[in-house]
Length: 257
Image 1 (cartoon, rainbow, N blue to C red):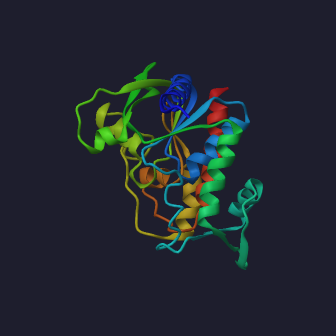
Image 2: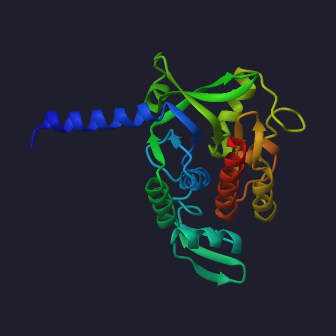
Image 3: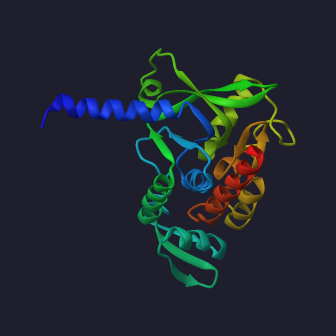
């Protein structure tokens, strides 16, 4: 085996994928449960979609379950999505189902990619592209290690008809909109309200309610939605995340039409 041939194979194939992702229908930021589910449903509907994840691994907060016990809980509605993805779950008691966190994360990733989703890890979003009368129409990207090392390296940009912020508690894309372009979000204050303390029942319900277009061209999903609208965090119950991802995909498909 020739080391140079191996290197060329990696470089050429990655460059091809990245070049293809410079023009997208939907760019999803964050490869947690909401982001991967949203991308899966969009790709299955023949939408050109890619996910950009700043960490080395995908899955967001799934892997550690609750306090490093790698199990998660879903309710009846969330179980339906697990069933659709072929993920095993066990009934704990009425309305509560337990799933293996590792199986959930790995299966969501595998099914999303098999549906046609491109996932780029170790890439961070530095900025947003605002065009067409104050509309988010792309992302400004850089390698995560560049940000971690605080290197002064200029980023590159991609164009996307829509962006989904699925970055979790920090709602990173929404923060960029309010901070860098001073845009007003579709919240009562026009700003991010910030998440409240844990209340699983309310958080699960409001995660779905808060999944919406929060700025022209920008949809929030998962924990990002609760952080933007000031709802509680939910802890290691993930049905709301899954359902939020599915709703975000439906909203995006409608907006693309």
